[in-house]
Image (tube, rainbow, N blue to C red; front, side, top):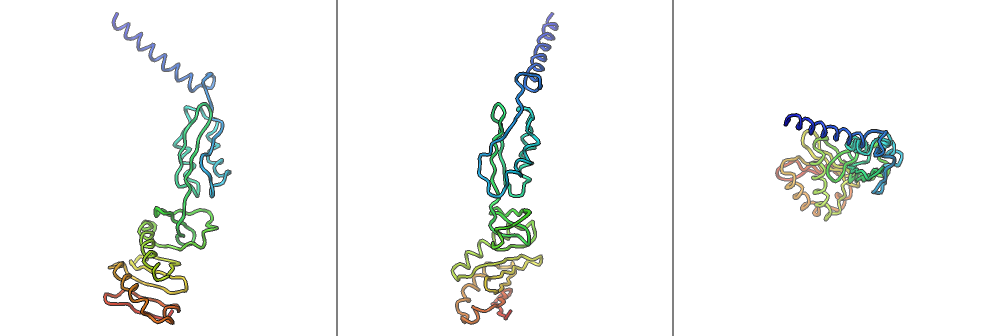
Length: 229
C-alpha cells in the first residue's frame, strides 16, 4: 500500500509539472504570452534604430518564458558600435534593452578605433573620428599601446607637444609622430627614462630646430640624435 501511495504521489506531482509547463508555454494556453515589442532604455548615438530592430525582431513573438535572452544579447553585441547590452523581460509582453555604446579615444590603424579599455573594434565607417590620434601595433598589444600613449601624452603636455600618431613595431620600437611633422623614435628598453631625458633636453634646443620637422632618435643609452626629415 505504501508503494501505491508513493506512486500516486509521484504521478500527481508529474501531472502537476506537465500541466504547469503547458499553461506557461503552450500557445493554446490562456497564460501563453508572446513578447510583442521592446523598449530601449538608453539613448543611442551610433547604433541606428534599424540595426537594433534587425537584431531583435527575429525573436519577437516568442513565448515570454521561452525568450532566448542570451541569444538576443549576443545578437545586439555583434552590432558595430555596441560595447555591452543588458536585456530583461517585463510581464506580459515587453522586453527592456539597455545598450552601452563604444566610446573611441583614438583610431587604430587605417580603419579601426580603440576605446578607453584598450579594446579595438572595426566599424563599417569611422566618419567623424578621423581627427583622433592614430595608434598602431599588434592587436594583442592594443591595451599596452593605449597605456603608453596616454602616459606619453601627459609627459609631453608641458612642452606643448601634441601626438598625431604613435606606433609600436614588431621590433619593439616606438615611433611617435608629432603635429608639425617631427618624429621621435625610442626603443622599449628604459622607455620612460629616455623620454624623460628628451623632455629635459628639448627646451635647450634652438627654436629653429624645434620648429622644423626633425627626427629625434632616442635609442641610445647616453643621449639622442637629431636628424632633418
